Length: 120
Image 1 (cartoon, helix red, strand yellow):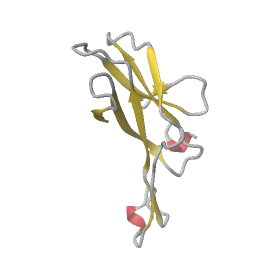
Image 2 (image 1 turned 60 degrees about the vertical axis):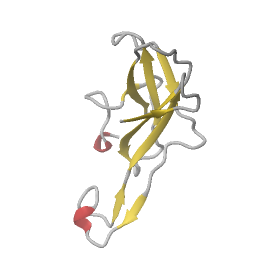
Image 3 (image 1 turned 120 degrees about the horizontal axis):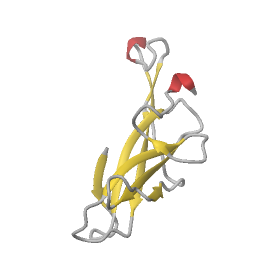
């Protein structure tokens, strides 16, 4: 997870994070849950689908460097970039990267409820 200053430095930030390998299509929708209390992340911001997620694939000369050790290609994870706006200065915020993969709701981007590529 990477955090950067957003377009409006005093009221926004950008949360970037990686998820599943890019060989899985369609890509998951990235989002970030935000709140002023750790147990109440009641705002959800979603990435702009026009330019996210990004990824790359590389042809390899040695199969042992591939994702599965069998193919000639390395698939990067999907890289998500979510802009959080409307933040207030001098306020503590809690956030959690989330993804949506064929579901109606966002699930944690990291943890036991994330479906792994073998289960997709």
